[in-house]
Image (cartoon, rainbow, N blue to C red; front, side, top):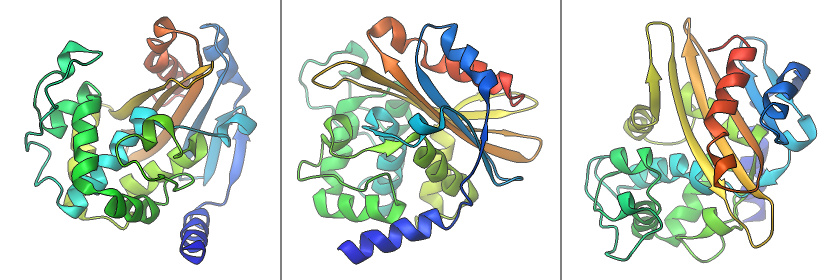
Length: 260
């Protein structure tokens, strides 16, 4: 197991030169919102990670709902669902959000970040196939513990903003060891915006641990002018008002870098 984990880690890291370019102009995007965080964008043309707060960008946090991208890939790859429109049961119990209290497929569930639907997907995948899938993807620390439907919400799975960006680069490049149809389907359901000049894909996440601060995530990629730029941000949050700032901060960072 140790050899396998080491091999995966080396193969993932070897794809990247780990050249970093500081982007101090991004500090304002966070300061204007009164938040402390990091933003990373990978420019494949120059093989460079453009980053605000490199130290934080390399720090691992629980991925929360950003793991829905990987969960979808693994579920489709192993056949836990036949496609993104196969309806999964939410379980019939009251949920924090009323919109989650309905059976639905992954296409709809990822748009509203439906936790019980993705927990059902994880249970169908099963702990051993999930463990193997996370390792195949080289996702973060690749640790999922023994509870198949909580590890991305409460740990032990953890990933950094840099690793999120690397993972998404491999997804859009087509170099993940995953079924091609599964990858195409996940690209389709993560589409947020499409204009004449760009396509924006993404997934937000919100980690609430036993002690403050909470962690807000937004990860994704933007395609424009035949180029793809994967990105990831995270920041410390205090409440729901901060959660509403995840995508706006990301937009401002992308605009500041001239990608949006």
